Length: 199
Ligand SMILES: O=C(O)CCC(=O)C(=O)O
Image (cartoon, rainbow, N blue to C red; front, side):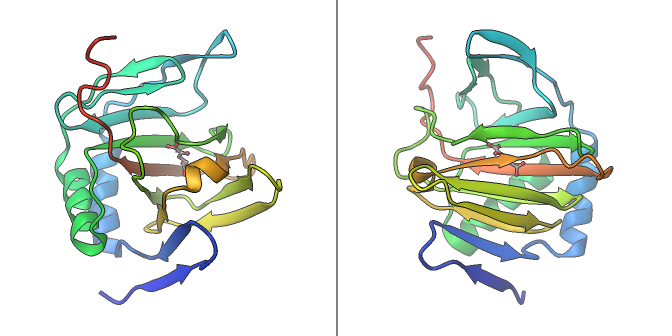
């Protein structure tokens, strides 16, 4: 497959536009439309609130993920999400044992500033993010300089976030009130299995 690779050489990410072809997008999207999403309540700075999007965590057995104080037990891998994980492994040697799928039902749904730097992530591992559906601005902000970058991620795009990006940049998906379409985002991660077994 011919791919267009945008490597911002001094930046710790690689943007692969059109990584998934239209057939791959359509098969994954049909599957993603049927996932049993949840809108959990999380506690941020001591205050409980429902997240402004829905999500589901798929992963290997024992790969539990703690997110804003919430322990998420993995749902077994669905067929096409698992196929994509193997494709990432074949194409980039990118290994993962879980994927967080976020569903943004229009431009009101969003994700605030954060870094994916939870303790259960395998130290030094990368994160692979795949977008489906509506294109949205994905915004990065450097921790020290405050410099911002906006990547308009379209359906089928892959963003490989290389170590140590999560230590030097935060990211967010801001509201875009004029946008109405649904966007799905798959972030494939490598977690330490059993990390939360004693919790
Ligand atoms: O939807 C996106 O592109 C961002 C997802 C994200 O930041 C995350 O899963 O941690």
